[in-house]
Amino acid sequence: MTARLRIAIMISGTGSNMLAIHDACRSGSLAADVVGVISDKPQAPGLAKARDRGLHVEAIPMQAGDDRRSHGDRLLAALRRLQPQVVVLAGYMRILSDEFVNALNDRLLNIHPSLLPKYKGLHTHKRVLEA
Image (cartoon, rainbow, N blue to C red; front, side, top):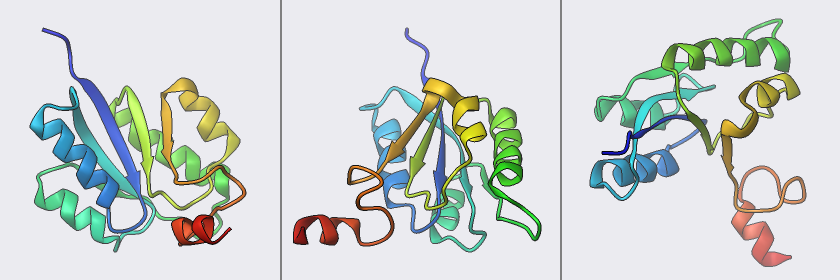
């Protein structure tokens, strides 16, 4: 039997993509387990949804005095505890530091509906279709 992939998911909002990934894991269409969900927003609705499903959740917001690098360091510390093989940015809306991205190297996947940076931010689908 092949080992299942350990996935950590990072979100900022409702968690719709996180739920789809978790559903695929539960149904067996994705041979993986979600080992944790991290958000930069403590009140993100997706955290409550993940918690309701029994997933480990952590909120790691920007704090006074944080810059991208220091916030990224705290995110990396949380990810080290979870020990994922892959980290999925599923609606994670904060720009991450180069150090964060480089630390994860080829284990970081970003779900974004456009070619960045042309259509970054909210309402991407609408802006792409209007272009």
